[in-house]
Length: 290
Length: 290
Image (cartoon, rainbow over all chains, first blue to last red; front, top):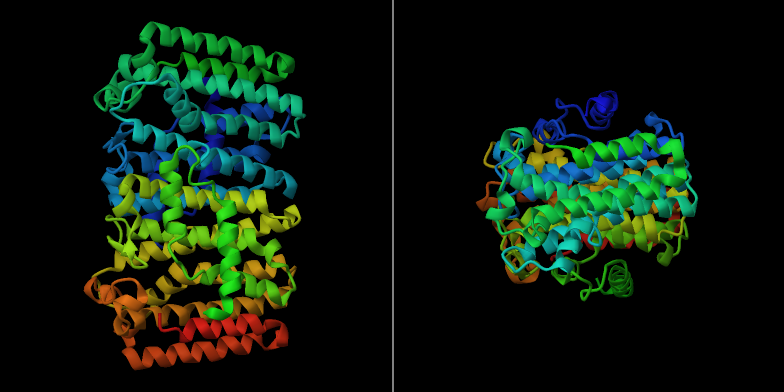
């Protein structure tokens, strides 16, 4: 993703600014938070937010609090998902997961802190008019909440070890990963004061690209190797998690991802060249091998 | 607290409205959330918010999203605090704690959900101008975050079993409980478009009453009985938690609470009769025996 290196650097610089220094008292929580935020994440979500903002010529610095708030939500969800009571993953991005380093108590609190800091960052760092900030808060809280990401995680947990069912699988993907993906893109549109029609087209794009991304992720869990991915592959299979490859087979899952990608790009047509960055980023995402 | 029965009923009705129905898919998370939200809590924080709003003649229905958002933050913190990795409390308000009923995974997610729903409620249910909503979001996210409640909880955890120290004890109380108390009162003032001087006076009041409340809570952990309190007394002592009674002795701790109360009421003087409800509520809080 070398094309995005400058953006990724800018995102990391902004995250650095939006989080208390590691030397702030009590240092334990700040070290735990920063350990996971600066763990070499690919910053897909903030990149999507910035690339959507590009369509509407919103400056990256102006869009950064929103982009970083979404990354904080994503990171909190990873910390909590890895906990022994949830996915019980000892590794994340090739390093010991948060609770393995800082203990379960601090990992729970670090997740809580990042979730809270996401809303703090939106509320205190945004330079948009208050009505836009409130719209962004509505968008993010819905995407992250019980009707979004948390709902997806709940269904994922209660479905483990049960027979695969396409409706449930769709629900999990659309909520656990899809909701926050869609939030990135809709937030970019909200910052750009997009028309209702533009928001609808971008939502279409977001939902399709989000699902495609999740399918690719499931495929990589089977075909990828641990070193490239920085996490243990085969974990979905060993946990009897429902996945698209498990339900449809590898080939059909890949076809489904490709079809979704075609449909997603069709939804971007009305934006013409303004959507070049978003198109390129989406292509990188779904073609990635790590 | 029979004086406040009507307000408590109104708060419960509003919380009912601001949370998805228990029958919403996936029901597991909604049942877990509602179990703790409707567990017979005393609603001290929303009552404080409403009583402060009274000073500025802000209608209770208008203030309700803010009052309930704070109660959601409080409830999430109780659910996470009770987890085995944190305080490991099996009981809360006389009933099994959330994770004892719904399991650790669902309790973690129920806490996450309530924290998120607090910000969703502020962003989507408030009838105040957007600039006021953003100010309320700033206030709540700061109070709940690493520089507030979470910071206090972190220091409480890392201090367990270590020698008592007055500075650390003050930090814990001012952050773990005090920050959200202060948030209730400052939020009432923000909704009332209070002057800088009025916000300063109310912040003084809030900080003193919050500390007094916490000292009374510590005293009750020693002198109260399990049935009245609905939780196990003596747990602070058995966990070697730092408390004011442990540091200063019971009598001096009570004197400190009384002094703080006097100072707190002095800070309310400028508001005259407009602060009657807030004064009465504060008196009830600190004189309570349960």
